Image (cartoon, rainbow, N blue to C red; front, side, top):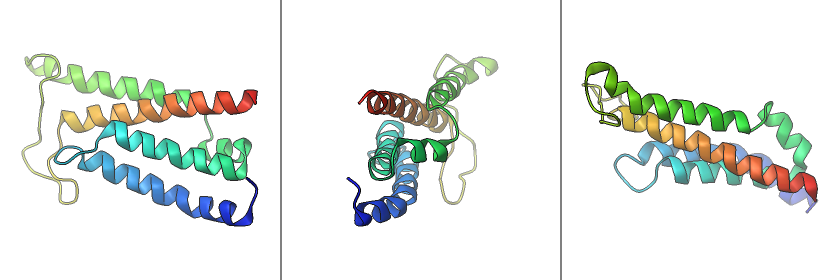
Length: 136
């Protein structure tokens, strides 16, 4: 699809959808949402941009292979799981800061696990879609 309307809309939709995906990620502690759904929304934002503007322009926005996000997400999720073990608690025990952050609310190890899931979902989805797009 190479229409002017779709190209223009995708330019404005990319940052809006990314912002919405972060909102869904952060709201996942108290309401439905979280890392998986937020990661899918972020991936959809890049897929829409790629469909409108071409794969190379979308890759230039990312500046690195999306597989890097996969590794970063696995690392963040792993460290959020083993961090309680450093203070004598079991693996994947939820740790929370005492004071809430004004915009986000309570921050704990569950948030970092969700961030890891978010990065893994974006990395896997974009790697698959970009690979399929290259072969067509």
